[in-house]
Length: 148
Image (cartoon, rainbow, N blue to C red):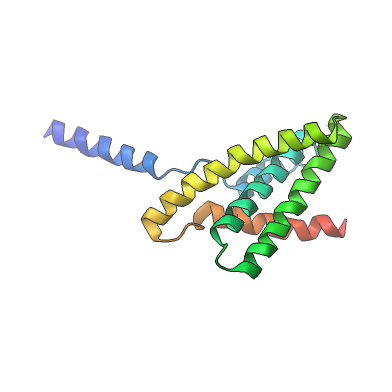
């Protein structure tokens, strides 16, 4: 009986880890970093996350050309923002800022893709849970950033 209990607990923990998300939901991250979101590091992280989630959504929605283009435009908005902040605040070249940006986005987008595959296996949809929430957060905040 003890072995059965241990096996059940181990299986539960294994399943829980198998469906865990790779990234903290952006809404939680923004709430935790509200006082420092204007710092260079946080701004760069936020713009990388928003670029990555929009890139991911753009890639998986290529069957809908209009929507994919809109999302791709959001990707470019956040990539331009990231590069501008990096050049201005870190005093680096455009080439170095672009290189850093592409590396960061590639790493983050691969986490979204991994979690999207797990979402699809469970629900039949790639963009659910925190990925959908991140997508919404980035798109709401874009409007606020433009108004400034």
